[in-house]
Image 1: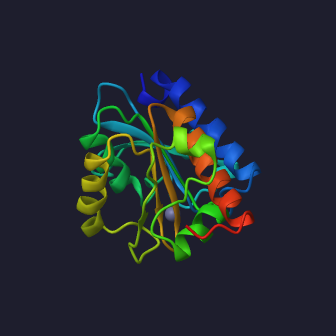
Image 2 (image 1 turned 90 degrees about the vertical axis):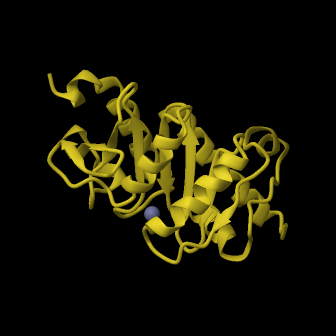
Length: 199
Ligand SMILES: [Zn+2]
């Protein structure tokens, strides 16, 4: 049996969040990426390259290994698969990753070094830290992985980070958890800016 059929429930949870994020306009056009770990394997289900969140379907999902190589599916794994794989390889508790170019979070990252915990809710839920990384590219280059993994190691409660000029990355135990974190990051960045807070 194909892995995608065997883990259809995981794939459907991923599709649900992709479609929701497109509707919310947290991800427009064909950027962004999301993935879910297949438990007990070194594989993940990931968005195919050049597919938008809105029309993502079982046919445009790919199974890739943690080196970003396709194992199953028609498309090419999204370019951010390598970063996702590096995170899964290192942190067993992370089961899903949502990366999107949500506008308020990305706007905040343009001029700050970390997200201001502008609400009590964010202060409790985001683990006290959501740093900004300057990776100078539309895809996180491999030379930045070590720095990102290092900060994650030092702050095990951290659930998200921002990429300057790019977007946000949210981590979770499962797809819903990662998506809820990404939504909270976007909401927090929006409230911080609407409140005129500068951090
Ligand atoms: Zn991106």
